[in-house]
Each structure stands twice: as C-alpha cells, then as structure tokens.
Image (tube, rainbow, N blue to C red; front, side, top):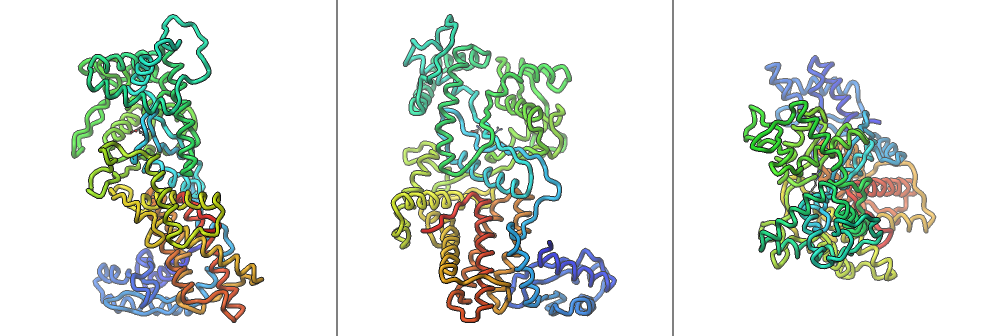
Length: 587
Ligand code: ARG
C-alpha cells in the first residue's frame, strides 16, 4: 500500500531516470505553499548543479517525461526549477478509498519486528513520584503503544528504585516507632507476619522523617546505612520488611498509574537482581572487565575520542557495596536471561546521561549487549513559570499525585465553562473530567521535542482551544456525534469523490499518517504523533466548515463526506491512542 507521496515520488523518479538524471533525486514532498501546489520536487536543482546544467531546462525535460508517463498529473515549473505537482481529484479519491477500508488507516507495520524492552516510570519505593517520573511514564507509555502498533514485541518494565539508602532509612525509622516487631529481632526464626506492618501513608511519613533526622544527625544516618548494608547482605527480617514495603508501594502505584492509563508488563525493581550481583561481579573480575582502584572495583569506559572524559563506572564501592550502576548492569543480565530483547530503551531524564553512557559501555565491554542495543531516550525538565525546575509553593519536589489532582479539578471547572458536560450523569461527568485531565497532562508533555524543557501551565493545558489534549478529545467527540446523528437520520456512507479543496487537503493529512508513525518510531518522538493529530483535527475542522455534510443535498457527495468523516475519526482515535489519550463518547 503506497502513500500518495510515495506514488508521486515513484513517478517523478522514473521521469528523472527517463531524462538521464539520477533517480534518487526524484523525491516528492508536500509543499509549504499548498495554495500554489500541494506537492513539489526540488531535485532538478541538485541535478543541475551536479551536471553543471541549467536547472529550468532540466526541470522542463523532467516535466515532459512525467507528463508523458502520467498525463493525469498537472506539473508546473516554478522559480529556478522547482517542480510543482497537482494530482487529480481521482487520485485523492482512490487513496481515500484505500485508507477508509483499512482499519489502520494506512499505517504499516515494521518490516522487521524486534523484541523491545522499555524501561520507564522508575518511581522509587516510599519516595513520592515527581514530575520527572511523570515525564518518563507518559513518554515511555506512548513509546510502548507506538512500538506495539508497529508490530514489535514489547515488554515494559517499571524498574522500581527499591534498593538504595531509602530502604535502610525506612527500616530504622520503623524500628524507632515499633521496636517490638519481629523483623528487628535478629534471633527470630520466622515465619514473619503476612500482613504488612505499614500502610502507604506510613511509608510516605516515615521516609521524610528519617531523611530529616539523618541530615541533622550523622550517627542516625550511619544507622540507616548499616541497615541498608545488612538488608543487601540478606538479613531475613529486613528482607521480609522490604517485601512488605515494595508490595504496599506497588499497590498504591498501580492505582495512580491505572488512573493515568499507563500500563507496565513487569513490576520488577532493583532489588530483584540482587542475587545476580555476586556472580556477575566475580565474572567481571575474572575476565578482567573490572579492575581494582583505591579499594573499589571499577570498569573503565572512557574512549580516546570522548569530548568530555567519562569517569569509570563503580561496580563495587570501597565499602564493598553495589551501586546504582551495578544494579543496572545486573538488570541487563537478568533481561538477557529473560526476554532477551534486541533493543532496550531507557526513558529517563537527561540528567542521567553519564550514568547510562557508563552502563552501556560497560555492558558492551562485558559482552552483555551489542552496540546500538541499549538506548537512553532522554528528556528535559518540567519548569515553573520562573523557568526553574517545577517546585511546590513551599519549595518541595512536585508530587505526581498532586499534579493529577489539580488537573482533575481544573477539568471539572473547565467543562461547564466551555459549555460541555451538562447533559452527563455525575459518573459520566467524572469519567470525562478524568479523560480531559489526563489528555491535558499527557499532550502538553508529549507535544514537545523530548529533550527540551517545558513550562508547566495547567490553565493552558486544560483549555479546549489551541493545541491541547482537550481540544483533540473535543474534536473526536464532535466527529463521533456527527456520525451518530447521520446514522440516526438513516444516512449512509459511500464511495469517496473529491469536489472541494478542503476535501483533498483532508486526504493529504490522512495520507501522511504512515510517514508520521514511522518518523515517530525512528526518532522515539511522540511529538510527531501530536503534530499529526493536531494537523488532522485542523484539516477536519476546515473541511467541516467548508463542506456541509448532513445538510448536503447531493446524496453521493454527502455519502462521500461521511466516509471521510468516519475515516478521520478512525485515524484520530488511533493516533490519540498512540499518545495515550482516550476520547469519551460524549462530552
Ligand atoms: N529510580 C530511578 C530514579 O528515580 C530511575 C530508574 C531508571 N531506570 C533505570 N534502569 N536506571 O531516578
């Protein structure tokens, strides 16, 4: 199934060849002046440069060959030698017909599907999630939806942070509050209670408490460090407590992520690979992958051509403990032994770039991965109106749950302001408010080029006007209700015929979906999907304003327009699905 752009490229490339010019200069693109011509080819200029010939003369020769082979296309030479190409209405109509009949509206699957693992989310047990985790969750979820849509075999893993000092802090703080629990009794021989000794609220309280005490009192911090080391060494009571902490956290996280419509296949964490570490380290030492330095074991990863020197990865600290990079290496080993992915994507903020570069190089050095098999999908920060990293009013880290709560509240207020939601039952209204809030949060994040920072502006994000998630949901709802109304009036869809410029413009947008999906995949770039969704919605709006549908008297034209509307809705829902937006039936 070829797109219009591909078909035109094929025809123009053949004309280049027939004119004795390099075929690969015949690429056709959508023009930036659709008022002059919808498509253009600029290759005659490059061909003229190479052949030291007159570009307009070459363009004329190409145009002649093109006209001979494809008399249906109108070709004009513009400026110094641009080829402007205007397809006939029938070409748009036949392409639209194909898109209408395809449940994927033209988006193809990857020709060589891969096994892909996506590591995203990455919240830490007991520590509240912050906006960095939100970005990772939203971008990672979009990538997993996109990769699946492309036909790849995807496994997603939340990779919980459950193995650091915060675990020792929780353990010691709980011990201070409830010293009689069996987990702290080194002589206790089990079994330990099945019921967790804490709730998620306890965890949320214990961690900052311990953290504050540790900052004020080095001896208190040392106790936490010691507890962490004992936990990592396998002290049974602490391991049992860890399991409780993790389970309680996961239960709470699942509620938040379900609410947000983000799904993970695996809920593994750093602690899951602890038992692989000893053997892995021994193996790295034996094979000379790791070497000793100042009492620590390190892996050298610097390369001569590095612009900035990359520090060695610390595999085992001088105190004998495994660090963040160690668990990441062991996790790669674990994934090799499990799903054995061709590609692992790590959706983590830019700030961890050096960490991942160290881990990737070390993994390749150790033979755990191949060049290109590990990829850091980086993103920038979310900033407040002052341009600095988003903080709460009292200067603390922004919590994900608060942000979602705020967005939900705004959505509830905004719906009636926009004249929406009045006819809904309270439950349906709440469901719509949830979808609007999620759309606002996700779209405002995903629409940015991933690596840029963006300013958090909830009011703008929740608006039904402009380039926002709620606007797109509203457009989908509008098309849906139009189609329901048509059905109610007994009107049916029929073959596409093109009788208006706004119709061909809409078909061009529909036609561009496949290319957008492919570019989004190769660039790990959900913003391209956002762009496509917005442009499609805009093209539909223009079409809807200029081309009456229900009031149209000509039955064939009306039927054709209904097909265009239905196809637009299918594609809009598909692309919204790829960025994690869920349009309600009604608003
Ligand atoms: N828990 C980490 C953090 O909060 C993110 C984990 C990212 N994934 C990984 N494999 N290191 O910063």
